[in-house]
Length: 181
Image (cartoon, rainbow, N blue to C red; front, side, top):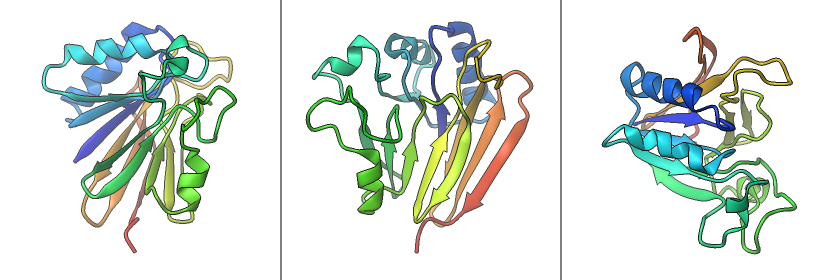
């Protein structure tokens, strides 16, 4: 099972379309998750018929305060419990009942936390939990980082994460290992 991760598109629909195109055609993902900022941007992903989509809102958007929208989505995919969230920690704008990603990880209730918000692409194994941020999709970011996306291969005994530069298509970071003990 192959999962694509995008985050922080901030209305840059051309970049989001390009990321979705590459994830679908070149990486052949089964699912794309949009990790927030901006909620309506994820509609672009629906242009790819048959592609499963997971989305969460960004913490400062109006959608985050809508109790009908789930701010953090927990899914089991190919035997891995994955939390999809905009932030890696609890946030002041959380609604009552929103789970705290750090607490879920600390209790061993998740295997992977996919998040955005910081615009900084990273992959980090903390304890037994893999934390993945695909970066952002803005043309220019105040932190000076290029737009990027993530690809997560979920195999029975191994997880592989690739962080990919949107413009060049170059994989600039790979993490590979087992999360099953």
